[in-house]
Length: 483
Image (cartoon, rainbow, N blue to C red):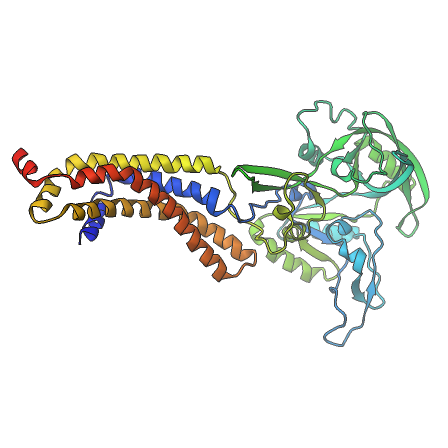
């Protein structure tokens, strides 16, 4: 009876207890971040890929039928075909397995890696498409002296756009783009092979072997043209940020870097290179196209309409490309983040980020418990008459202790629940999206809730013990005498 009476008293004085409940909720939020979510893979984001490509939909200049062994309808014949990585397209970056395993195309058809200008005009005017972003790219060979002697390694070159400059700018290097007009800028993370030369000083000459465009519109490196360009700087293209907990309960973050072999060429040098490759024609085949949609809410419907209108092209959401990067770990490099953080199959792709250290969480719990103790202590004087009346009616000291403890438990449970479940519910949704089964996730949440509530309740009872004991020590005759 007295436990129920304590619960009813909490309801009656809930307005006076608002500050205590808020403090307990904040403590539960902090504990949820630092304890309950420490075993959950951290927040994974890829905010840089769209900026790097310039759009939302990757356009691949042919339609593939998937890696299937036979046509299920029996009406068409298929044969395996392997692409040749010419270096002038993003395709082998995002889908390198096509080059390793081959893919299926209808018999008699030859896929092309370039997009016709008329098709480009149609894509520009397509409903829902805000802009068509084309990034010209050329295969080239860097001829230099490496650590082990002469080396010649393939690389792709592209014009140095303002987007790339903003994305990769290093505020510590004020003269990073001093050679922007005529310099060559290598991708820092791509310099991972020992035989590749390491340029240390800006202005050092780099010799490129450029392909030639034949009459059929194909690029070939057999009759290469030499071109010399000064080295400008190393750029770092970010891919995504990962967050994880260290052994002390602190939060660590690292931004991954793109590892594809690419170099960016200054504007003036790019114009000279295009003139050399095309024989003065200044017209390169279009192989890299990305569409920017007007509204991300219509992204998937726009892709479906585009696929129907252009059956010979393939449209891929860059979100799907990002998921593939998360799953395979291709195209990016981490030097500090543990492997389990960024490349473990079966991990949820998104969860609540860990943003509080464990020490700070315990400090919040301590503050909330002190506030609760003070709340109970100030209530002793205000409730002397109430407790004295209950004692006069036959209530024992043990009953008053139960009454005070029930109030402490009720306030703690309310605060812990308000802090834990709204935050953890988002984590549950993300875990289920990541492919985890519902029952293990549900059981894990219950265990975490019991852990969070237990820690908070233990601290609350510790600091409420003295006020509750004083409340139970009220003598009925003393109250009646003072009245």
